[in-house]
Length: 198
Image (cartoon, rainbow, N blue to C red; front, side, top):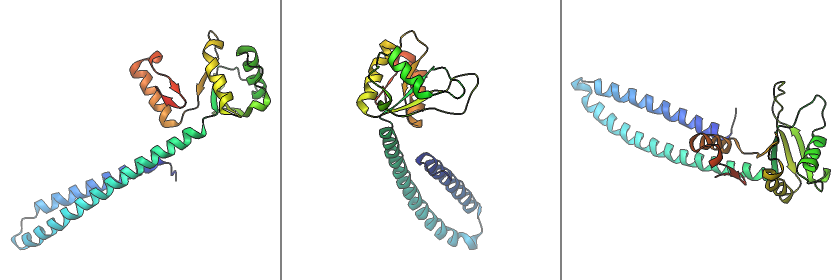
């Protein structure tokens, strides 16, 4: 079972919807009961039911608030763990390639950052399943935040006119927000900085 905050929130919403449906069915059955003998019992039961319903909705509201808070905290931690990461798009992919060599070639020849050698890179590999039609992005984790910032700040000028593009490695929720913002405001009016959509 997936225990990410998003799936917890989805499970909570499903539970909330089920509770609402069951309570609606119960209310309908109570309203349809017209026997004089059961009227007193139904009234007492109805009072208890509405007290219970109020309590449950308050409890569910509190749980939902806690899950949303946890989801935000989880997203912040995930984003923090990606501070030294960048994605390189548009670098040709070959069978049995050496991703690190290709990356260092781009850094030295395209971005004029030959001072960033092997020691500056902790992780370098392709992301996602193999696709014959397009080259997969390369995920790069730099040794320091400063090295990552140097590459990030130089990308716009040094890679202008090339097919290579550098983006931040956003969390899923931030990537979805970024895509939605670009659709709404336009491609050139939205960008990311330090994992934040602006």
